[in-house]
Image: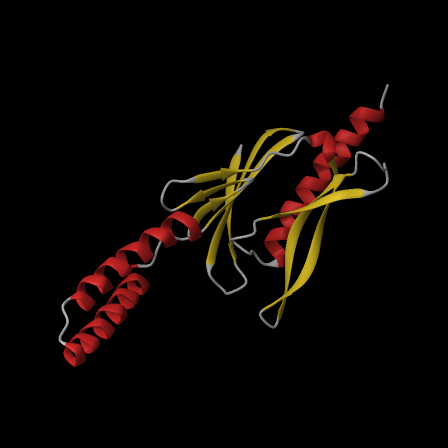
Length: 178
């Protein structure tokens, strides 16, 4: 079963949360961001080109124009390949097609929490997975933040949090029952 809801990120941008239910103990949450804005791409390209033409008129060196075109292309490719993420689960899908996957074994999960942080003079919330410490049973070995690029607001995180807590409760109930 799959359903989708719209939410906002911390800057007011649109996000789509897709929920896929595979079984009582298996769910997938995917946050999708809007594609690359043609308006912003055009604005950046025009700004770089105008600056290059201004320098060209002062210096009368055609290498400046060639360098501006080259820098614009490299910047766009770098942005698409390393920065712009289209979809985010535990797999981040970049706009260029590159994917980065993080896998966490369910037995290593101690808890899932919503934490708060100060980000650019704002208090933001983010979802974290707390991993058990193999040496100390009551300790935490690592904190893994989820949805790092999309930065959804608290209402979206709360929905994911409640569902994940349901899965953890289901797992604890099945592991303790005879």
